[in-house]
Amino acid sequence: MNLRTGLRAAGAVLAACATVCVAVLAGCAPGAPKRTTVEFWQPFEASRYDSVIARFERANPALTVHVRTIEAGAMRDSIAAALASGALPDLCVLDSTTLPALLEHGDLSDWSAGVADLRDSLVGWESCSVGDALYGMPWLAAPRLLVYDHDRFVRAGLDPAEVLSGWEAFSRASAKLRRVGGMPVMGFARDGLFAACLPALAADDSVRWDDDERVLALEAMVRLRAQGMVGTQDSLERAFESGTLAVIAAGPAFARRIAGRPHVGIAPLPGLVTPATCLVLASFARSRHKEAALRFARALDSDSEAVELADRFPDWVPARRVAPAGTGAGALFASQVPRAWFAPATAAEAARRAVLEAAFAASLLQGTGVRASLAAAQASLDSLAGVHP
Image 1 (tube, rainbow, N blue to C red):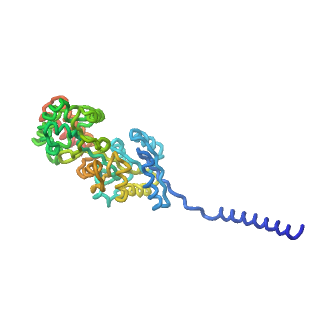
Image 2 (cartoon, rainbow, N blue to C red; image 1 turned 60 degrees about the vertical axis):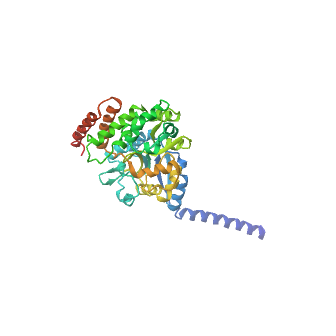
């Protein structure tokens, strides 16, 4: 072997040794920190979260978020299976169909300390609270507005702003509106009579439900019902779109879809409150990464995300006391959130609501006198007070 060949061979051996040493050292060196994955269950398309997750992960390099989409109707069963197996998500979007049982059984993580600073900026806490303890964070809300056929009011010689300013005024004008075209005026959702009547009857809970003020209010609803129609919410929306119904109460999804049509107007519900549903962000007592879940929930519900939130979820508005900047139907819905009524997620409230809805149905659908139906409801509520404090 000549000198050049020997040098090349020695060089090859040294290079091989260097490669082995680097590999050995790399294997001995500590690896990059392992990222904690926040498992997030929710009912929307996962892509709606892409931008907020990207920002969150940049700000929290030790965390990553995995979004799993579960249809709203399947969420309760999915959670029940997860509770049985112990394979729980870290964060979940919950609604009124899932929250009461979870709160009653103590399945949710107590976030009282972690969200205390948000109490004044968000609304809907009653949906996820037991006493003073908070087991989640209100996130998205769907208040209701009146959607009306402006042309029907014009043909009847009526000013919508004046007529829709109060339930009594609307009731007095309903017969005149009915005569224009001979079509029903107001739609009452059979699957939501409590929400349909509450804006007219709501008052301080210290007032009895059989007092004169509430009797008069329900009598106005009965007169309005005589000029209207009853159906499911879906059927009422179809009737309005086809031009066979003058006014309905609807949420953001329907109102935004139809608001661009020339003859359609939108107005707040008269009265002190507007019934609303609420989506809540919550973790489970047995979730693995509760602190990380709370951190991501606060990012979703932050001021900086509120405007984009309204664009990502057009069927909802942020559950914020001060509405983010906006225009059109979305802005009007957002402005109603501070006066929204969210049902407390308790067995007592469910029982109370069932009693009142039965009273409203008796007067609106079965012809029972208003004073008699509300007196019976008050008697039932009085008896429930001893069962549900």
